[in-house]
Length: 301
Image (cartoon, rainbow, N blue to C red; front, side):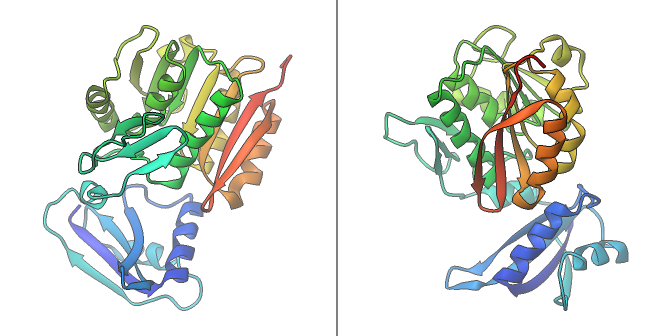
């Protein structure tokens, strides 16, 4: 990306803008957005940054300003050298422990705790390095599902990004057939490389991951492999609502669906869509501002 829009504001203002961004379903997905503190010794002073592949237009600036309630801050724009800013922004991130999983980048060593499964997920052009509350929340929920006796022989991870959730599910249910998919074509190479680094076999057999490029459930193989005992989707609230009938059709009676990518403020609408499709809530977690939902298809439906 070659341009950046910058605004400096207090922590609460930037965090509110980030929440507004998640609720702005018409946001241009080609524009990356990030908010963070300016320095460790200034925890209340934050910056909101948007990365673009073109010089910001007046419409881009207005969309950025619309994220702020009340008096918006002053904007700065600057042209940047040709650097993969998504990758750069993920470098040096601290490892996390979520459920039985320890997620780290190559900059950090594995955990010595033998009760944890280590996954190394490098910075990449795909979402899902584990640090975001939605991904870590899914890792914790998957661990809880296993602890509570869920059996999964056929797993789908829709919107897989880096492949991390598919890898974690296969670690918990090692004899399952796992299908991972994403609408972004770049994810195929990312998932294959991450699988290689973590010793996850790619293929169509039990204990292996098949990677597909697909928009939702729109793929012949993805449809042919259904029904799935466990379907995972860590995407966004809008697509989750739209895909509720397709996801419900893709799981059997008593099957499990794990949803994330929705803000707690969006949970009511998402749950209503899945209730209409015949799924009920089994458990929920809130991680930061994000809801993670474990749903089950009602028996007999």
